[in-house]
Image 1 (cartoon, one colour):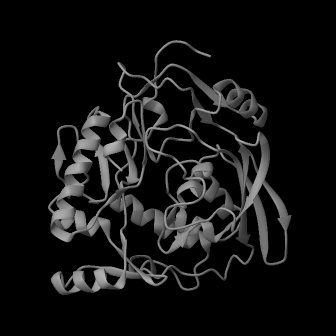
Image 2 (tube, one colour):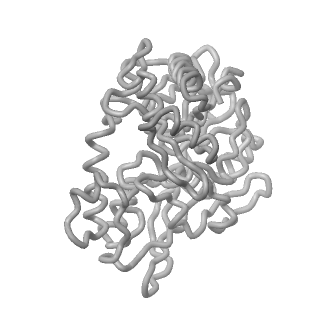
Image 3 (spheres, one colour):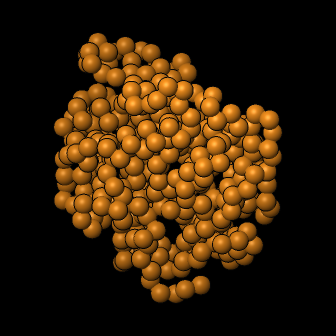
Length: 349
């Protein structure tokens, strides 16, 4: 293991300076068993760091080892009449994988084009956009089970997918004990390239041709994302910083009576609110705090404007949450996982 203090800035899309004492790259499955055995089950594993806040200043670096998942490979496992089963390594870039499926005329991931991160991270938080969730097309997730010391597969049902969550999102604040290392994901994709569901969003429908294929839909999604969301290379961020709140009917009706123009969508018997709308209504769109702020184009995206620290990020996030709570009586939850070398993360759930 490397003993020098290492900076993880290039391993998280928020661009935070965070430090660790040991860093290793996982490039093949055998690396997992070797590294996990040596770490005594406590470790941090990152893909592209697109959904984490790394809170480890140089004076308090991560003591546990950090592993970077770079397991690669894409293959067609089964080619059936109406669908194909495609296996993708956890370390592959998500958007590049989506583009690969489009090049091969496989449908199912077109609405999820442009989402940053790795393939292995997708099932952890059950990524979604424009009415689609990755759980809709996941056949199974292949993992190394740390506790049982074996490689196994979890079916879609076993993954216990929910809104932006799954069985794999089992992080506990202040703890680095992870039960799984994702090796690859099997996707069940449509082979009927010209008969895909069009997203029920006016912003997309208005720019689609008649009878669109998957590439048409993905192109529209990428076009909209480029206009609404900041460029990661210019403004480091983790995408959506807060999860859209889900409330019951009583709370939804109470909000409708008090705020006539509040956008509310039905979600399997519950009601989903727009975190971006709540934040913007509290005056935080484009607002800044020291070196961080909510982006001017999208109130849900917190950006690192200039070498910000995790402390600044968490303090600003708490200010946003407190304002939304006061005005709407809604508790916003931070979407990225907070990994802290101190006890600070306990106060920012």
